[in-house]
Length: 85
Image (cartoon, rainbow, N blue to C red; front, side, top):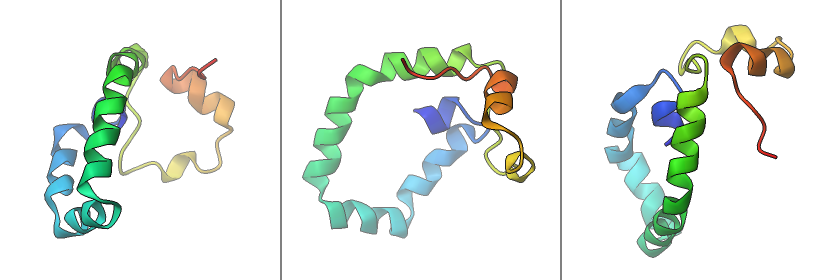
């Protein structure tokens, strides 16, 4: 959810979940674990969406290199990211 709505990747990101590499990861950790985690995370979906839509702008999915030397506090101010208390 955070990657979909909190970054510039958007729904195009979902295609990556269908790649053979992704399916291999699911099989390694087990489909039961994937499903149980998804069910447990459902309660966090509204909170995550609320935090994403509250951001000033979306985090750049692919051009983030320019932020490697920027202080974290400045990045948080620029994007409207608040720490979970």
